[in-house]
Length: 280
Image (cartoon, rainbow, N blue to C red):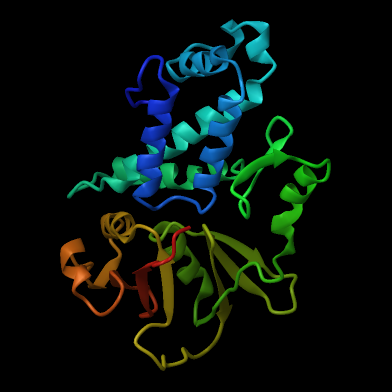
């Protein structure tokens, strides 16, 4: 749902607003190329095409537009997709000093939705694609769309799962479900029966063991996150033991390590929640 106030008729000012948000960072690497592709396609069309786009940006349903606008509806869809994506990025950039549980969950939902918007970035559009090497919009070949859809399947490593030995894996799994927001799956039919815990891209395997192996480092797990403040408030509200608090943003600028906090699970493991330095 779009919420910003946009100019009524000048699409170039809208593109300037998009470019300003992209310039602040925190967006997908393909966002600038997506903006260029959409901009150049509109520039190659009659002025009415841009005017219809502005009408849709201000809430006019696509079904109310004339037939010549219906013919280029994929362009309007991508235009609105980019607008909504950048509005969400702007909203996430502003982190209040205090957040309610509802606000935390809403921000998590917004963050999770960014990936859906990014899936469309730089895919062929109306028979054209953006060539990042030449910085030009070129005609797309028939195989481009299929290659775009299949490119993500070439990852040979998808994720990894640290193995936590537990005297009572069920008790530990319940803690991770109820306190840390993981989902548990009991996998008794595999070669190593275990409980698999999953949240977002983080996976942990719990196995039964009569002894707990002593840790050899400060933490037994480091989880990298985009916004540690959101997770900090969520876990604190759930009653999770915080053994090292999250520093203020300005204080962490002078620190030698990433902005982070440390929690303790029900078995005494120290888990570090650290802010990722990568743009995802």
